[in-house]
Length: 386
Ligand code: PCP
Image 1 (cartoon, helix red, strand yellow):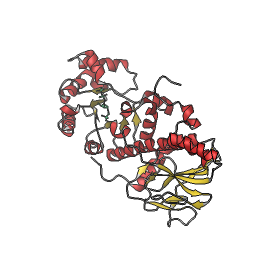
Image 2: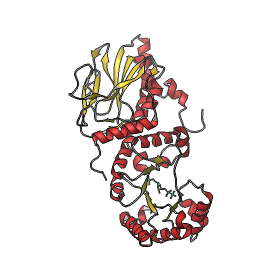
Image 3: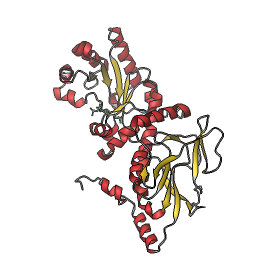
Image 4: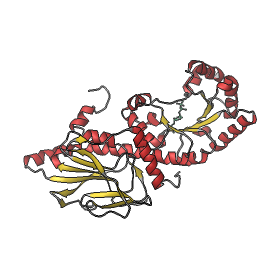
């Protein structure tokens, strides 16, 4: 147990992290000796609508289902999908009924974050983006946020403990708190102290918007750190922002006018895809928080589609086990499993769990590469949203 309001992992593993109606269903089925062999699928939209999402959370889903007497197929983590099942479970219903709640939670949350990260990453083009949004979510899911952000194409993240879990070092610059601790008018002292204290490998990125005009603070940072200064971060608070793009471009101009071309500009604070798209040619890096970490979870549901080998589904859902394909033109195609797929289509659902044993690796670098390749092939983000 923990003194925080966090469900312990043991209760997720045991199936106790469930909705009460599953407990009641299990009780009823057991009492009536009813336990059919079923096929169940995890699906968001039934049919393609041109709106692709990026699948994440499969690693945790596989851990959840391992040890249960079931067979599971799923799209590999880091695959784009547009309708149709992302996972199929085959087994006796009572063997996995209580796991539905946690299973959908693992997939829904991670996939929503990965999808928004992908959107940001695509409009940022080659400009690196760090995930700064851990502060907006419950600390128990910080690693889910950072891992999903990387799968979606972000280049790094800020959360230290998530870094420990993922085996990657967290990145960061400095908060306004550091500047304020040195007092108004003492920004140079704060930046210099930071420069002196940080290890040589840490980039010198000074936050330049705390008390006065951005250009003035940036030129002050150049003066204070000289050639040591790698980058300046502009995080102007929204009420003082005006035209952020103009502020960034003016800052760049004034740096270049004084021969400080080596100083990069890093932008952060309330940025979404439209901002990132507008700013990407003017800055050298972004920090994006809420747009990624606060992404809407994907609306996945788990539905029974076959009972004892026969098609079965509630109305509005499609019965029968399905396969989904990547078509040669980068499209997504849904067909009944066992039927002939589209010409040149690649089947996407692969075995994940075989009679309770996980049969796939979850190397994070490989997942990131897979996502990048699929995004390249499908080209799902053409019009940055607002
Ligand atoms: C930045 C900004 C946001 C963070 C990063 C990004 O923090 O103000 O809070 O998240 P967002 O994209 O959701 O806005 P700092 O400048 O470090 O904030 P602070 O003022 O706390 O130092």
